[in-house]
Length: 85
Image (cartoon, rainbow, N blue to C red; front, side, top):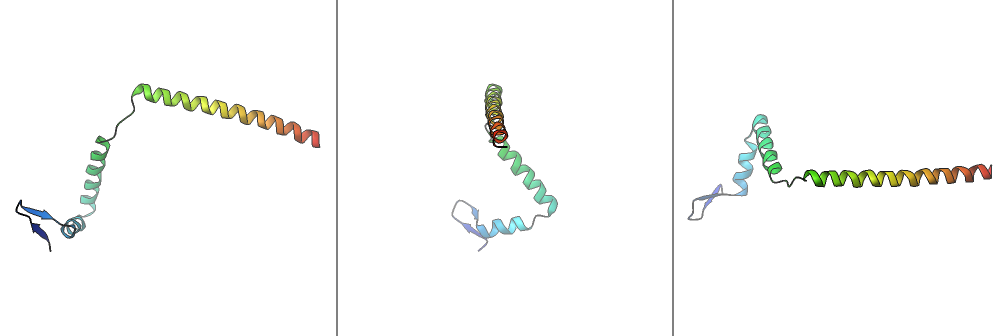
């Protein structure tokens, strides 16, 4: 069963789709991969400049907060260790 005739023309089935895909050589596969990737990238909704800036600022603020917390925890534990010794 290579293809079906549904009255609207021949329709490719899974069998013929697989057969067509296996006939591609390495160059054909690379070309198909490139064109498929390009098509998928065109569907992506990219962040605006403002969204990118906001996300970057949020990341920097969170990093600063975590850094201060780790510094304070390090200082506290260091003093506790010194008191034990």
